[in-house]
Image (cartoon, rainbow, N blue to C red; front, top):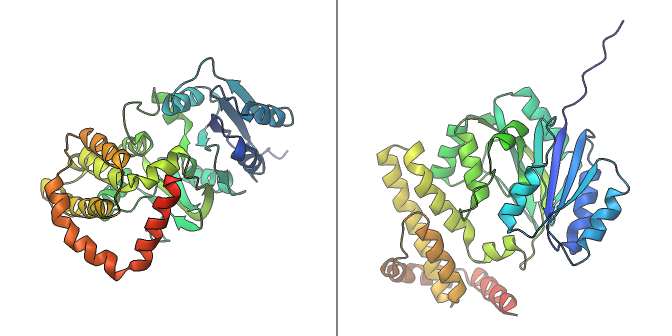
Length: 330
């Protein structure tokens, strides 16, 4: 008598949302169109009032894998994500967040689960992703698919490659999600990045060399607003100062700290030349304060001549940034 093959592991897919009617249907459709079929889909409504609730309800009525959960009260974004994650099935082996503005490739779950199943020490799987018309999450050689958590963090800190993307880009083992309460720290500026760092202190990292997710570029979204405030560079500096002493030798830390801060202050010098407003500077002062740093105007001033030369030699990029500033201000 032939033995039946074991069923594939259950994946909990989670989309927390609040007033995302414009992209929610496309997000849900991309999840339901997965080639991997053994998943539950939690739609967590944070008291939406723009029609998002009705969109979610219409899809939930069509597919029994969907659980629509309405929050008992409105929460901030990170608290809402944590609340949504608290509802994942006790039987799920993996957990995948899909933000309501984003979409998955049809083979996203299949490819990520296959890698994780082949490597039980992998706690977090990432991949290439598309942001607008750009492919992100590059920098890892194609033959490297599994690395120790410590190694990938060192590469982040030393080489500046960023492989975690956004919450939509990564898949976690559900046991990690259940153990971390709350999953995302609610007092951090870059709680998703820091969750990945902390998980990789104890687990290996897996990477699928395919574009498996698509991030919508919306200047009015939280993600879009942070990007136009030069958040990725600030994120890198904060995580370097928070985790560098843990994963780098004192000599390595000091050497790479100097390089990172030089790059950061060059960007701030450009912000001065582009006449960035009070919101920009308040954001950076607040971010630096989370790791005990202060914005040093003397270093900004010293970086201005070099940045002026850079802008003069690349007028096309300068014009692009000025046009973007005009769009944001309207």
